[in-house]
Each structure stands twice: as C-alpha cells, then as structure tokens.
Image 1 (cartoon, rainbow, N blue to C red):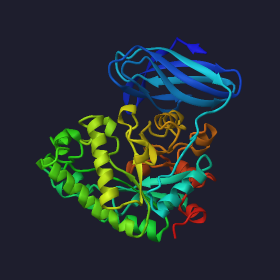
Image 2 (image 1 turned 30 degrees about the vertical axis):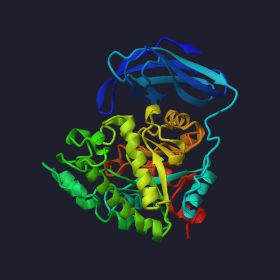
Image 3 (image 1 turned 30 degrees about the horizontal axis):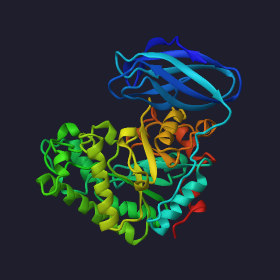
Image 4 (image 1 turned 135 degrees about the vertical axis):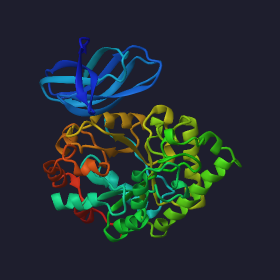
Length: 431
C-alpha cells in the first residue's frame, strides 16, 4: 500500500504550533505490517515523532544522503487509521508512506549474549532480564535528589514503589561550583548530595534495582550548569590528548567517579550504568565534538572503570541511538532511548523500540531510559513494544497530572505485567 497524498496541517504540539503531515489508511486483514517513508534527499541527519490515531509511536530517523527510512513494524487489526508525522524542519518533504504486509514479526531480540567479564550478580540480573523479556516491563523512576520525593508520591497514589530507581552523579565531581550559578543549579547540586548512600540503601536494604546517569559538569570552565555545551568552552578533543590540562581534569573526574562506584563493587551490587547519555544530541559537552570523540571518551571511561577499578558489577547502557554513534557490541549490555512525547500521550512507542533493535542488530535488550508520559502497558504488549523498563524524569513529569495522571499511575503500577518493587522481591533477589 502506497499513500502519496499526505495533507499538511498545523497543530499544537510540545506547547508550540508545528507542521505535521497526515494521511488516512485502511487495513483489510489482521497481521504484521512494515512502515516506510520516502522523502527528498537530505543533507543533514534529522528525526521526528510519529502518531497513529493520536497515540505516540515514537521516534523515526532520517539520514544524510538517503531518501528512504524504515519506521518499524506494527501488528494491526482491520480498521481505518490516521497517520501523522511532525515535520522536522521547513523544507523537509515526504513523497509517500508505504505499508507492506508480512507473514510474521521480526521485532524481537535474536541472539542476546551476556558478557563473560561481569560479576556474578550482574550476570544474574541480566539473566533475570532475559527471562522477563517480552513478558513484563519494569517500573522505573528517576530521582534527581537523594530524598527522591517522587518515590513517596508514587507510593501514596498507587500503594506500590518502582522496582528500579534512577540516580544522578552530578554533584560528585569538584567542578560543580561555576560562574553565574542560578539558584536552580545550586539547589540541584545540594539536593543531589547523598545519592550514593541512597542508592546503596535502595539496592542493598530495599532489594531494588539501581541505575545511574551522570550529568557531568565540565571538568574545566564555564557558567551555571556546565554539562550543557552552550555553557562551557571545555574542549573534549583537547581533553583526549594526553598531558593537556583538559586531559588531567578529565581523568581526575573519572577517577573520582570510579572511587565512588567502588562501594557497590565490594557488595557485588549490580548498577545499570548509563554514562555519556544523549551524546548524539550534542547538547552535552561529551557529544559536542562529534561521534568519534564521543566514542574515544566512552572507551576511555570503560577502560578505566573496568580495568583499573575492576567494576565488573556495572551493566553498561549505550544511550546515543544513531548509527554513527554506535559503540562496539562487546562494550555495552543494554541500549536505551530517551523519548519525551506530548503530555498525557501514553502511546506504545513501538517505532522507538524497533529503532533500537535495528541499531543493535537485534542482539541487545532495550529500554526506555527516559520518558515523560508512561506508555500504557496494555498498548505496549498489544503492539509488542518489549522495552525492559520505563523511566519517567523527575519533578513535574511525576507530580504534574498533565503528564501522568493519578489514574494512569494507578493503572500502570497495578498492572499484572508491570514489575514493581514488591513484585521484584518475589521474582528476583540478589541476596
């Protein structure tokens, strides 16, 4: 089925008016369908979001020098559907949408392997992930502060806690006192202190799963929140040259983080480790110098933490989903994507799931490592979007009901296929 007539409209999306293309199509028989877009040849990489019947189906990518993009696979029943895609920029032109029926699904992991050099409990946790894959999704919640009021709020509303709690290492390096600091930056840094101790409590005492990201304040120079490219002149390319001042500061920070994470190694407490996240967006300094420098930094970080600090309890998450930014397969365990769709939209994000699987050659478990609205579990399993976990960002993404209403939180946290902390304790223990 080829649809060349896509009507342009303007809609309010992400709190601003944007252009979308819209088309209707009809499915005649129940089955699996591949979706493709043909577009004008482009010079720069771009990406956008797709909606079907007003539900978010996730991210699609358009590559330089290409004019054809595979969006993903959907299991559809006979009925009429409305397809919408937000146009990434003014001159972007789509020629047609193509939908092809096929005999069976191919959007499952085929040859997932566990790295040999992982600790016993890290291996056990990955084995557990393998076991629940396609049968359950883990409830996760990021907490930017050690206090983590999001956890108490979720428990108050749902009488359950997430199985996976997200922490940040943003306050654990010395260059966090910068020029022109805003009150928000100061409060964030102070509130983040003590996260290591809370993570230890979450994993050791509560029996939960711990994940860390690292909003890495630039090792030298800048104003306010210097993890943002726009706020620092720290040059990663120079920092990768041995002996430079930038290199010395970079290594100082890595070694400090290695020391902090060593407390978990002594207990063989697995950590889902998501460093250098969203590098492909280039809004953080670790992505500002392009994919090759990002990969050099990733490999340096991996070498120091794995070989010098022996942190074989770290389960590494690659979180720069773009083919040019791919990390060597044996140096990460899980692939993650960060997607923020419009408030209150709980679509299945299936195209984001398929994008990750394709980028990892269908050999890695994949996760929704950051999100706003939580996808509806019923839709996730109906459309076979088998993310390992979801992870709403902190603050308003939890407390503001426009993102996740109380009713939606109750549905999610009491869903038979969602693993909460109580359910995790019954299914898995690292003790």
